[in-house]
Length: 450
Image 1 (spheres, rainbow, N blue to C red):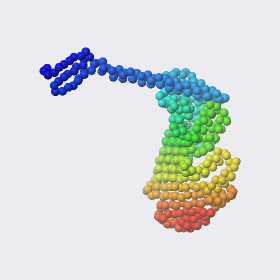
Image 2: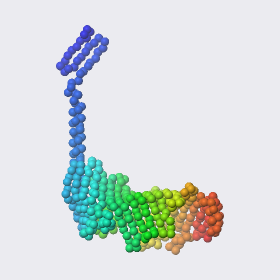
Image 3: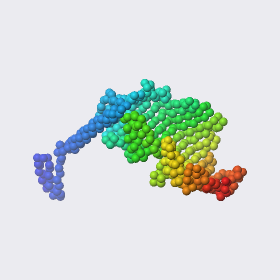
Image 4: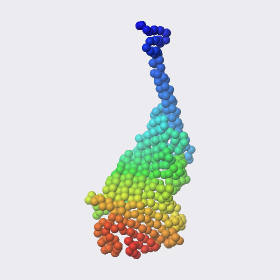
């Protein structure tokens, strides 16, 4: 072509000179197109090899951890544990765990699912023997085995603190019991789960599909789906984990008592959630119930109180139903003293009660609201306390030391007239009612009753 010159070079690069412009074009070598593909294949091979190598390491570490736990159990005086039929795999391993003491034994075929960051251990055939008999069938003929599900955060295996891990035991079937007085209870598919959170707290969950209790033919209480949980703070959880581990490795009375003492030292945070409640106290009384019940007890360390909150929806009978909500706070000293006495530490009960009263503890009713089927609301607020200055001994622990003030709003029409008929003056329809207790006297709206 006129006005241009083409020069060919061996590496297949073509250079073109033109009057109007100047540019260089390069036709890539075919082998250069394959380079990214080769790099990708090599990269995948390296990553895949690293992954498989990591899985091999993790799976072996997990199984070694199980053997270490067996060794700890065998180090105890009264226990024996062993792993049988072990088959190690890259992603899944299987084994049979047997733990026994002088009177009982537990056997469980395990399936271990390995992961880079966590491990899941399952068993759908946990058998418990006691004195040569199936211990679960002694609780109920409907249950002969349990299922086990364990989730382990791999990093916790190294630290041995089980943070981020959980263990769940389920009894598939109906758990039944009957006392000598004829009272009976049935729990359907009960389950227990222990969970150690990453912040160190420990949570014990108990659930059931349905609960039925009865006393004779007339009285009964039934619950639908039910759940209750107990949460222990990080410091308390650490003590429980250490004491529980010691007892698991050695079932001595000393370890058992130590675990019980730590477990009942304080009141944990409690959460309850129940559906479809039904109740009847006698044949002459109608059946009552509630659609939903929620209840929480939570310790507020910053305020040195324990908070109580709850709600009941759809409470009543088939004709009249309503809702109730509650919020209150109790000085922590009340809870701590109550827990101490409930644990049997009552050698100095009177002194402990006097010491509590002298701190002038308070109970604050932050809110109590009740709604009937017509959405008419009744509410109450207030607080009660002990005047610690007048308590010198247990004999002073009476109404004269109580100081209280409550305000009630939303009384229905006719309440004032009814109160007047019962000798309680000063109540007017639509007006708040103030109830005070001071130095042994009780007054309503300033009118002393006694």
